[in-house]
Image (cartoon, rainbow, N blue to C red; front, side):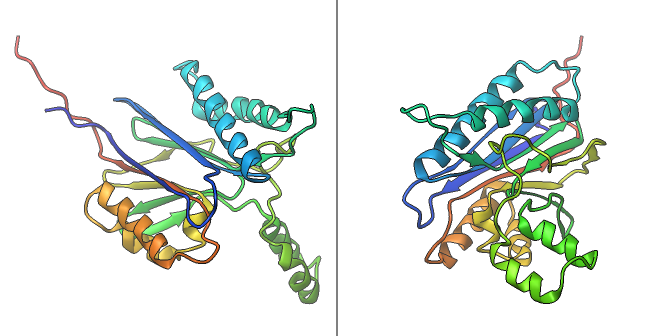
Length: 260
């Protein structure tokens, strides 16, 4: 009996929004897998188009990727193509849509995890009982917090500016990506490590502690269902779209042996 190195589950809900602006995909092979989540922005129609076009183009580029190219190299080459694509999206009158999307990708080759993130969709790793957010939220808080640490802003100024703290300062479609999270040295996974990619609808509804508790559920599909059920149970008045991809690294794949 063959056992895959990777087990993957994906689920998406609309929440209380009128439309789904998230988009995601995953592809699993014997030695390699990849997952991507995007959260569109710029109005219902524009946000949906931005995330869908980003995923479509990324899938096409991934299918053409040289197998010998490293993921960090592939990511860096790809992200500018995606940014240009979304930046130049136009309406029927030829006017630029001013749309955008977050982008978080995680690829595993053998036991090595490589990621790239732009925006505030997140990547988490759960090992044993420790949950770690390995990407940053690329919003105004990121800049504000650095200014406060460097004593370049007073507490009063910080509080005044914090009302705009969740505004994104990096996203696909802004016309020049300057802030991204990418690991140039792959992260070594251990058997039973969990990797979670998610749009902001999840972590704005659940704390890291609550996320960790849900991921303790036996079975990857049950764990993801528990996670989404908890989001829907909390169902805030303005619950955002929520999309998650949950990956379990199973360790070395088992292969049937045939006697000669």
